[in-house]
Length: 587
Image (cartoon, rainbow, N blue to C red; front, side, top):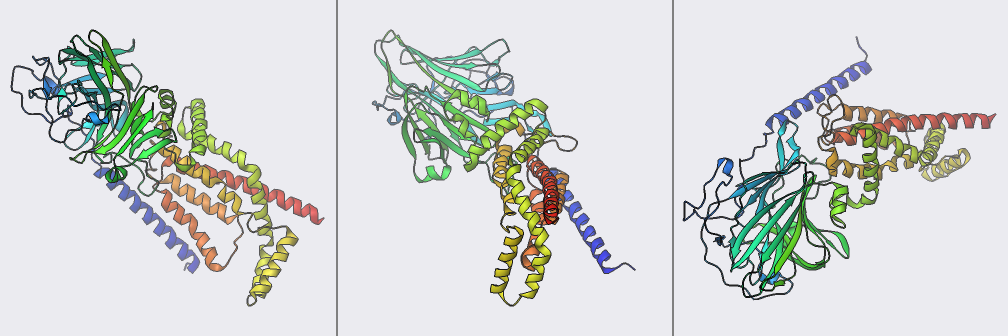
């Protein structure tokens, strides 16, 4: 017959095993229910258009890619009443509005540009970017051949990058968007150097060229307008560039639902605030307009962003608004420029669509690297990331880099932690005497307090000193949480064996269970102080933390596990040193 104590242990082990198997089954069900991501062959046009009136104007090839060009050079399209192009009032120098040109309807026209890091669809209606895929970033580990789509225009999603010329003579002014022509339909950018894609149209007797310049290994796209004014009148226009997006979260966002959520929304930089968030709710209450020298406007989501970066020497009016269709527009307009007859005018900007690469974003524009949002502990998170990145360069494994980072942090904090561990060693030594005092003066709280203080003073113990080792890692833990959550470098980064992605939870919960066991072991080394209820609550902490950490990113759990193991080693070392010092002092 087993003793009640052994029966209780067996029961607890059985319950724990059952709970573990249930969680595994639940995780498998969630993974099975996760649908693979699918994209249409081609995105929708950036404007809603009617069927073509001249069926010979164009033919559509496979995948919706245009193979023939419209006959008319001056074709313009009239979008629906919810026009998202800013009117002339958005220009810094407000001109008079122009007359609308006759509109000829047309079907959607798309060309594609492929580099080693980007695949871009450009709509000849307005020259807008209506889809961007990132070949180096699979949408899921289970779909390694399906690239992540950052921008897309479909029936379920609206996220496009628009630009144009507005003002008295701008082809995008009023209620019209130009239809461009090009001799290209499927462009491949090789490793030899940059490649340009030139779109042209005729407008009010002048030639307007829109040029996209792609680099082989870069997510930054140069966009430029050139107007050759062959007319007898001055050409006046200003450039706009904007991101047109709905408020839906990305469908494939695997952010931890119980943790700190990555920011989804727009941002700009201002002279008095280097990183200023523009949230959907803010625009619902009041549209934004602000004139800034240089600057940028970006839309942020988990791991990725898109951004328009105007020339940094000019004054630009940044805006954020919502159109009548419920679509949000984040962009800027540049100053009005005048091109004299016989002269050539040029407008230019830059468009970035890709991962949140700190080093590259810092090179593009001041403060653009701050779009990697590390929260209020950004000042601690940024050096942690740079150290982690440097360690990864040495070991070529992000899991090992996290382990070595933890070792470095624990080594740097050891002098402070050692003082706390020493205080805990003294508290553990006086615990038996403390228990006797609590039994003797259980009915006299005032007397018990005086005797306890006298005992602390005699033995050199500090009941608050043991809190230091527990509090020191917390800011680093929170900062590292943001580093692991926001750094695209750790997205789908493997460690070893079953850990194929350090940015998501451990699929078999091995690391969280090991972390809980290490936390229980570490707690057993500490003196059990306080009333019985407090002691029971402290014993429940490892269980509660284990349940919480089940769904944390594996990289973060790995950090906390290694941190606990090193804390146990440091704690036992300090305890032995303190015991030796006390024994020698007694002799």
